[in-house]
Image (tube, rainbow, N blue to C red; front, side, top):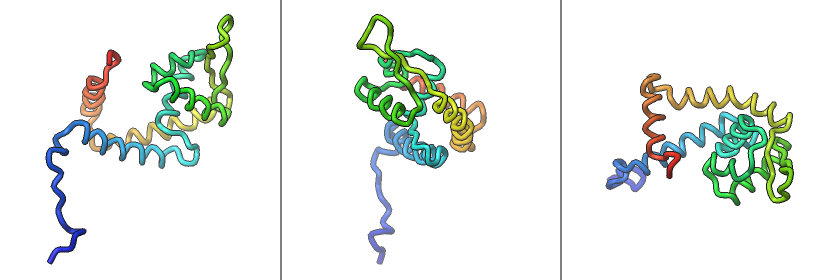
Amino acid sequence: MKNAASKKIDYGILPQLIGYQLRLTQVAVFRDFAESVGDSQITPSLFAALMVIEANPGLKQAELARAVRLDRSTVVSAIDKLERKNLVERKPVAGDRRTNSLVLTDEGKSLLAQLIPQIEAHEDRLAAQLTDQERAVLINLLSKIFSEDR
């Protein structure tokens, strides 16, 4: 007699759903990402924010929110976390008391330089079973699902 733990589970249509497969992939990606960055307590969203700020010094908070696909309140919370860690600094925009521009601190630049090789190794692990062409196709296909226009 089989016990409940050995019962094969029927997932219905889930295995054919793009969203379901993306969710399973996201769980695996986030788990490996967390292991890759160790004790830094940097999430994929915070890493994206650091990268975009580093590439665009003086970026406004609203521009960052659009770039990393976060709503304004979530991006404010993310910037608060980065600021508490002394990784990002808010600087007032001349002539507009309500707007801040964002720059990485020296500590933020140092952490980002440390994280980039770790994230590159993480990406290599994720794509280990893909050829370079398959990896490029996957990135292209995923970008079609979530395009800039949506």
